[in-house]
Amino acid sequence: MNRRMTAWVSAMVFLTCAAAQAETVAITGARIHTMGPAGTIEGGTLLLDDGKVSAVGKDVTIPAGARRIEATGKVVTPGLLDSLTTLGLVEVGAVEGSNDTTATEDRFTAALDVVDGINPRSILFPITRIEGVTRAVVVPRPGPGLLAGRGALIHLRTEGSGWLIKSSLAMVAVLGEAGAQRVGGSRAAALLELREAFQDAVDYGANRAAFDRGDRRPYALSRLDLEALQPVVQGETPLLVAVDRASDIEAALRLARDFRLKLIVAGGGEAWMVAPALAAAGVPVLLDPLANLPASFETLGATLESAARLHQAGVTVAFMTNDAHSVRNLRQAAGNAVTYGMPWDAALAAMTTVPARIWGIADRYGTLEPGKDADVVVWDGDPLELTTWPEHVFIRGTEVPQDTRQLRLRDRYKNFTPGEVPPAYRHGPTPPGATP
Image (cartoon, rainbow, N blue to C red; front, top):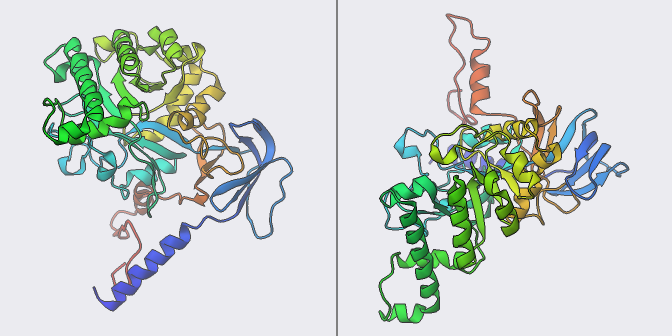
């Protein structure tokens, strides 16, 4: 690398670090949904300082030199969180080399850590965050076995380091029809295999020394898998089970009760049918409110009213897209849930405060209160309406640019005159000495 290029790289690193330093920002005159004890503040001011919310209310003193954003007539909310995605694991689903969602070999299952496969430079991050989604849970998809591995919680300002909020967030498993297919076609066999895995994990945890001496019976899983399952069987790390049919959810509840697991249901196409049992067990459901068509016999009871029915029954509901390319549609799904009976405040909470509690970050995120991370979105209208756009998005107090590859391509061609050569497209800054 020549000196000129080295100097350019150093300058870019410096600028990136400088840009990551959060400024002092005052958002004034807005309707602020704090999602906390202060409720909704009309014509309020939100003050962001050093990456945190420093003040919120009607009469907030704005320090000299603060950047002001006039937001009269606008709506302010916490940044949104999608509770189940494959962001950063896939770029083009049909291109094998860019798809790290699934491990197709079963040498390691529970031990797989999704963090090692996340690409923080994926172009899907800018596309997603300019739509108001500032955090996401990233999980692997199940491979040949019932256990897929461990998920992670990230924020979407991924240009530098520090985007990982929480690793080993949950252990991902699959039951129901997909689980049965992995063990020869029987749901009962899938439950038995998963029970064996947890029994082995409990035994291994109590007899590590004997295992190391070779004085223990063979286990169904590898040592690394058994190690990864220890926090699950100890009730510290949740078991996230992808399951839809009501009877399969009931089976998962029995499994969780027998092993004292912290269970989270993902999918839940028929979860509303067993809502009282879920509410009594305190088991959250990660739901896509748009999933209402019976894709198979295990989702015959799916309905657009699922979110409303679960909420009414007292079940903890958080929203998910279970995707990478359409995470930006999360708030559209929430709007549909409101259309079909879910209270507006509950739908917004299902993308903010509720996932904050589920994933153990409620002390830092989910409400606009002093001391919380400044994940903030300024909307030009109701955030659950399709025509609304986020005018400003802050992640930990730093505003992310309203810039994506798609927008650059749009600008390149929107005023294109036939016969002219369009300007060259570049995803990033032009190095010194290079042709623009």
